[in-house]
Every structure is written in structure tokens, then in C-alpha cells.
Image 1 (tube, rainbow over the protein chains, first blue to last red):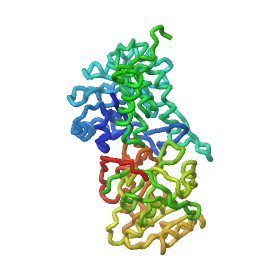
Image 2 (tube, each protein chain N blue to C red):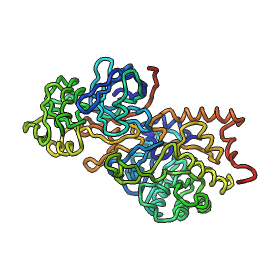
Image 3 (cartoon, chains in turn red, orange):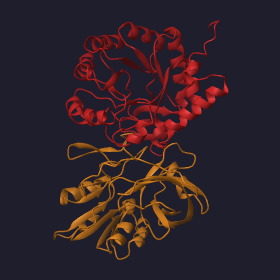
Image 4 (tube, rainbow over the protein chains, first blue to last red):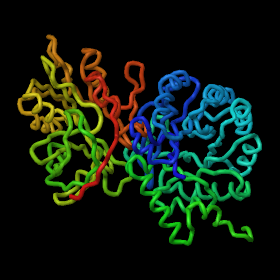
Length: 284
Length: 238
């Protein structure tokens, strides 16, 4: 299953690209409107880029009135990414849209590197959302957590259905002459090819900790079918494409075709059959 | 509005214009779009493409004016005839050109879209401002333009009588023009990763709203923004 990473595609502007995904994951919505961070918000760096968008979104009222109806018109499964600054923010969004039939799942963005960290612990947020919604809940975790698998276990225990691994890493780029930060907010979220081993490790360790019992969306620097297959072998049940979509609108179809070829070449009838094969029976 | 296309195109020429470089590409089947629209140019060896407005669209060519201010723009300025790069466009909302009393106002590298606009509009009056006399050599791209160099500011060249301004330049210049003439059409600039509304990297705050320049702009206060639909893209052989 191929998805997009939240915030890396606008399905209302590129519906054909969105429809080439199995599921579209919408940009994070928060209770109040957010104008986002000042310019500059982007900076290129080796092997990737930094972003500092700041969860720009119209707020849940306008989202329900203007965005959701148009997403529903796409006629494809979509998830909504949920953000906030405190537990009640997440619960409010889940309450507002958590029972809406068209929303296939809710992804709880517990890890945006560009806003103040959520005051509540991840498990508390998940628990509050579970109390108001029966939808599948995916907890999107940060690669900065000192022990990602232990947090994964606590959010699953609190009611999360699955895991989205991982959000971007905090990074810094300096101007070549002034030596000052290129981004207005100095530090931003690093995405790109160098994220792959970081994401792969998080997927691997969380699959192991949960004994392969929960769905995991693997994301971070995936650009080819072989890289998607690596995610699946490490334990992902689905793979999300991020910044590759900025410069390759055919990436979903290309990666899907490459993934099937790469899986067949290794004796797997379907890519999903390779799930978890990176885990040696003897453990490590 | 023409649909954007992604193609790979050969460089047909590269010439110095003051401190800038005018990079000419073979146009092939690409539509140049409207003045003020832009293309994303791939940069060899770099992850992110860079946005550039169309500077000239003479027969069979597309030309972009580039200021070598950083590693990626230096790579583009050093490309040679015969090499090829990928590009994607035309993107965004251009200028509304059917105005009755047009005045083109440009500052620094912000003059980039004005040569194409001037030709498309039958050579209306143009005022240009630059920091240095070397930069002002680029005024040759807009024959007949009235030119000033700092400390004179281009806003001082705007006449008192009613005019329909189409402007492009650095943010302080655009804010000054907007303060003088709130109805001026202003072409803004910001780093972009995609050019079609996906990354939100190019959003700026304007009149209390956060607007994605690639979707609602880059020309603000122009024609009502047409929210583009990216329906198709095609990779063509050179």
C-alpha cells in the first residue's frame, strides 16, 4: 500500500497524483487557523531539504466547511492528520471529524519538529482521541524519541491502531556567507534520502517490539521500489512517499511498479509477503 | 491557462547581462505561459529545483534571468550550450495584462519577468531601479525603460497620475509600491520545493492571509487566482 506523507501533496490541486496513491493523507489540521512560519521556510542541504512550514492550515471550522467536502469529492480513501499543542486540541479534532464516514483513519501528528512540542505525553493524547473516535488511529512518532519502540508500545496500549514512522529530523542550514540560519525559525525538519536508515531503524525496532501485530506506515527518504521493499522487510505494512513527490508526480505509480518487480525478483508473490523478513528468527 | 509539463530541454545559449546570466533553452513543445508565470528548473547536483519567471519567450526559446547568489544559481549560470536540464511549467498565476494605463516597475533581479511582459503588452512605459550601475546593465533587456540607481529609489519614478502597475522586485520595494498603490499587481518570490501547492514552502503573509505563491501567486492583486489543476505531466525526449 502506497500513501503520501502528510504535508507533501495537495490532493485538491493534484487529484490525479492523489488518485495514484492507495490512500491520500491530508495535511495536518489544528483547532485554530495557523498562518504558519515566516519566510524563508525552505532550505536545501546535502541529500535533502529543511522545511519550517509551521502547520499552516485553515483551522477545523473552515476545514470542515471547505476542505473535507472537496476531499470527499475525490472519491478515494483518505486520512486526516491531526495536530495541536495540547491533548484537548487533538481530542477536539477527533471529536469533530472522528465519526465522519468519509475519513478512513486519523493520523495523530505527535511529532512536528516546527511547532512547540505537545504538552501531553503521546499516550495521553492517543487515549483522549480513542475516547471520542472509533476510527483507526495512527500515531506518528518522532525519530528524536530516545526509545521509539517503548513509546510505540505505550501508544498501542492507549488505543492506537497503528504507527506512522517517522516524522522529519530537526536540522540546521547556515548561509554560506553570513553564517546565519537560512530558515527564519533557524531549525527545521530535515527530509530526504539521508532519512532512510533512520526511518528503517524505527520501523525495524517497532515491528520487533510489537511482534508484527500492528500496521506500520514506513516513511523517510523513500524514492524507489527497492527502498520501499526495504521498509516492508523491516516491518512496514505500508509505505509513504514524502519529498520525492515535489519533483516526481509519477512517483506513486513508478514506486509501485518497481516494488512489485523487486519483490518478484526475490521470490515474493506480493510485496506484502516480504513484511518482516529482515527479522532473523534467532533475533539480534 | 496552459497545463504545466515536465520536460528536459537543451541549453541554446547563456550570456552575461551585468552580474546576471540570461539562460536560453530550446522551447520545444513547452508553452511559455503568461508574463509573471514561472518554471521550476532542475539544478544538476542539487535536490531542490528552483523557480524562475519567464524573462523572454522569443521564437523557439525560453529564457530565464538568473542571479548567481548561491550554490544552485551558480551551477545554472555555469551551464553551457548543448547541456540539458529538466524544467516544469508554466506554473502559478501571471499578470493581468489587459490594463488601460500600464506601468511596469522592476527592482534588481526582479526585472526578470518584465522583458516578456513588455513585449506581450506592446512596450508600455517601464521604470527600473538597481543597487549598482553594473546591475543596471540588465535594463538593456527592456529597451526604453527609465532607470535609476540607488540612492534614487524606483518608487520615486512612479508618476503621480493614475497608472496600472505591474511590479516585481525585492520585498521592501513591493511593500513600498503596495503602500503607494494598493491596487498594484505585485510578483513575489520565495523558495519553493514543488511549484504546485504541495510543500507550502512559498507561503507569504499578505493582507492578513497566508498565500502560497505558487498557487495564489506569484502575482498578487492581479487576476483572481486560478487554482491550478496539475492533471498531467509528460516527459519528452529532447
